[in-house]
Image 1 (spheres, rainbow, N blue to C red):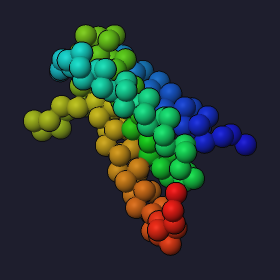
Image 2 (cartoon, rainbow, N blue to C red):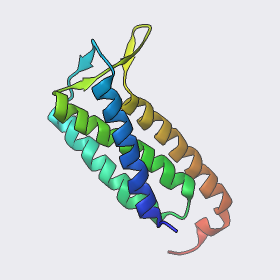
Image 3 (cartoon, helix red, strand yellow):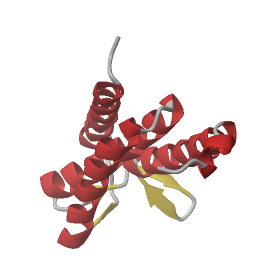
Length: 129
């Protein structure tokens, strides 16, 4: 059985591969520049999510953090590879890419799983550490 850390890394790299492949293969007229500070922050955030989430005994938290980390890593890789992040998905006046979707979905799952985990273990919240 895979450890939570291995699961987190595998999911994050699967999301990274899917997003970067989509960005490379999908034609896009739109692209936006990400500052070096944003790219560094994306890398640090992904590292923190992958390092800390597996410590919590919740598959939902690990999965949500991994999906969000994969999206952040995809933003970093796309920004470095193309000098900006391609936005192949356009709906109305909004342009975005799969990395944005992965970050939003991962954050939503992470938040829902954290609330569920806290509620399930609410009696333990008052225990001394």
